[in-house]
Length: 394
Ligand code: PLP
Image (cartoon, rainbow, N blue to C red; front, side, top):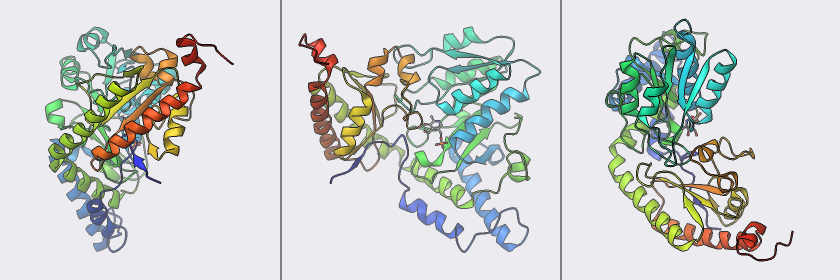
């Protein structure tokens, strides 16, 4: 059976060039970079090289890059680390209503520790208004965390403007750039942020490795304590193959960004246009322009996202209802509720995310499959029957 993967926001396949860059560090050069002997020194050279390369690509200094186990750890460290470190100064945090659970959940944990959290609204387009941030800042605000690009609806936040507002008040600013890196240009210097999280598996690198950029001079409470790795700030033996893979993946992503952006956007735009023209009663969620090139999120009225997903999967089409991390829960997505969708419409939403090898023919197959699936499900939907004024046989 034909299988088409349209879930690149959940994860991406490893680029073969990345695999080749990683392979030696599993076998011949397996040393622990903290060991003083030649095996360790060899591994350490690889880690240092990766750190310098990544720093250069992000517009940072190598000493500002801290390797972690991925986006979730980086987000947790930034949010909890900055909040707890500054507890004496105040206990107020500002974030947005559409953050990934990797930021939302640490904020909820901090609320239990006595912090108060302001969740900035995003309006119908799914974008934070900088004036709302300026108005929310209090004398006791110790952290602002707003994501660069949203994982569900792909909207790109005005992080440069937001970070400037926080900086003027000397408040540390964190951004979760997990979905953005590899899709749009990302430079910490240009954005003016104090902390930035990213994760290699979102840009054709390995899973289980990421980093937190921490601007020189900013101190965070530790999340992991133990050994003296990462300049004593993040304990745990360094994932050498992972780090080497992340550097290779980032180098490829940056050098091929323009080409991939143009291709992915054209396939996505073709898909979106056809769905909007050929499937009745759909809502295109998020801002039509200020969004990642790979993201299309639709609400199909009168039917359930889970049923659509299941049937599309049977036809070989892999996509997502809400974010991969929150699927499995029956709650409607907090992101879709934040942009004003009512529960039923949020429930009927599907995220399609395209990748560098997705072809226009794949997108065409996806359109046909979605059309057929939506038609079949609506034919048995009591809500749709009610809408059309027909009898409701339930
Ligand atoms: N932040 C965002 C915006 C994400 O999309 C994800 C993963 O889906 C994460 C954080 C978590 O990253 P990781 O899977 O590396 O833990």
